[in-house]
Length: 337
Image 1 (tube, rainbow, N blue to C red):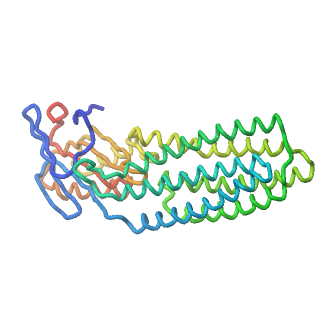
Image 2: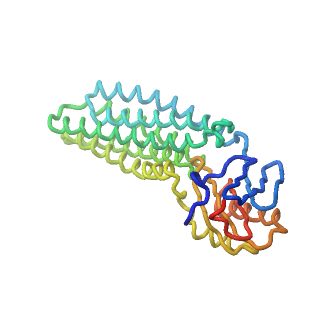
Image 3: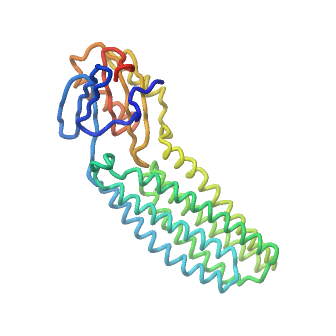
């Protein structure tokens, strides 16, 4: 598919126009205030204020960070006095999640900043970057846990199973509560989904630590502590890998998961008068919002305003695309625009 917007295919902010090779490409601009410009193209967007859901998410993240930070300190101390590498590994895992939650909170706050002349999209994409950094940090933690567990497996030492079991039981409560709080928010947000899955995995890992403590107390097999540490690292890696891949895709402006370009083309070509759709691009502007730009070849422009309203409504309701730039042409202008 050719790209006539060189060097960038992204739509610019309000009031843009192009004139190259002697062929002007006028754009219609329609925003939340209902402003209208010329009749040849269409640009529809909405710069919404900070939503109530974003404020609630920030509150949830702050509470979760405080709660888990207190538990991490207690768990690390308990792991040290009980000589349990599994408990220390779980504390390290939980601390990684605390850092991830803090990074998510920072990104959410940045994403609420309004657009500027320098950052015309605002700082929404900081949430995508935060999810990538969080995933990379957790993978680094996996490497550390594997190393420590391997050393302990080669040289097992006694473990205070009572302290380990009680601390891990508290961990189940803390992680389950945090997961429940995060589950109430938008699970299509890769940041929120990643934090929720990590907390859910933490609760399962804590349950595994309790089981290992009971097994050691019953059998005296101290090597189980190191074995459970390997299991914890595996759980972290499994839960993080999908988030890492998705974050990389979003940072590279891949088409968002769940959106198929063929379906969008079919939907737009199904609108009255549309003969062709080309230069179609879809990408994420944040972990929760998507944007689209496309050229539509359409013979009749007399009802262009009504047509653009129908097209943008279709994209919003069917595909969840909140920011669409549509250039309507009577013939293909790929060489001139």
